[in-house]
Image (cartoon, rainbow, N blue to C red; front, top):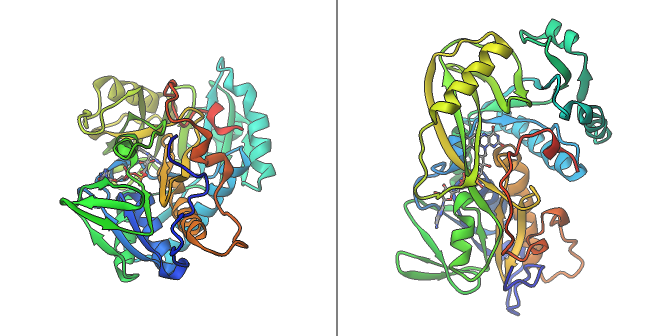
Length: 398
Ligand SMILES: Cc1cc2nc3c(=O)[nH]c(=O)nc-3n(C[C@H](O)[C@H](O)[C@H](O)COP(=O)(O)OP(=O)(O)OC[C@H]3O[C@@H](n4cnc5c(N)ncnc54)[C@H](O)[C@@H]3O)c2cc1C
């Protein structure tokens, strides 16, 4: 990475304290809208920009699966906070609903990931996550799933699902109520330091938060900032046939599914090659529909009547962890979710708000809230790496 002081602190002596800060949030997905709300709630004057509408990126195409079944301490803590906020928003955020629903992880016989499951579940439990290893027969007794071919299974009780678009729209409305200026249809280019160019006009802020999802690498590169964040296609489909079982991840097939208002939603369909965020195919591939349909028949006795199949673009990093923090003087990034950015957005937005305001603060006593494991400075920016599927069992560990 270039051009960073690793703290994000503005080097301008007149940098204001947190309650006077002006912040541009670029990107109106789940992460950007949450950051905008949380910044405004802490007294910042916030402008939220999106080049299209809110939720026009990956957030508007996400499956809305939300869980806390993470083995690494930092991931478990972030997920726990996000879930806590989703549940609270269910009661307090008009237009948003969160449906509690257990999340099953199933690994088939012959899959070496089965051996890793007991230890992963122990780690999740060490972090107070309500996850249990279950005997496949007992799983079959509890849920309408085929389990006789499974070698290992676990159930995360604290999970649930929601409609990601409704979250972004509801948070966007809340942002406006908090006084955030929302400018949609406004494509942002980055200037020098915390300045943005919109419609040819340069606008200066105390901080700029870049939450542009698949466009992260491209947008930051225009300001001479290199980050290793690669876009790749991921797919989902909905079926009109009713499904009343739990959210399920068939780890061996690489397919997940959950209840959905039309019947069922299923997905993954990761295409592990770099995609063009401005030119990717937004339709679901035939192979994806076929393989998911087969897994649904096998695992849940669900013969899908496909209503819609689509693709969106997720972001990968060299180590599978996101980049959240400063990348230059007054410029901050949040990207690289490996397909898990929606479920973590309520915690990420809060982290961004606290991190940005702490970085701008003159108060030397302010502890840095940034999470070290997510520090953008851990990379040079020119790393080459393979894109890997984000939900796999192995990717949940340390
Ligand atoms: C099919 C599919 C299923 C998924 N399922 C899940 C799931 O079940 N659970 C989960 O946690 N995650 C899931 N994800 C991943 C999730 O969608 C993302 O991790 C998350 O939505 C990223 O949110 P974001 O706010 O960072 O980015 P985005 O939602 O992509 O938002 C970025 C925004 O930036 C805007 N933008 C881009 N460039 C500019 C610019 N120059 N100026 C102004 N605005 C700009 C875009 O218009 C966009 O609205 C899924 C993704 C896909 C594709």
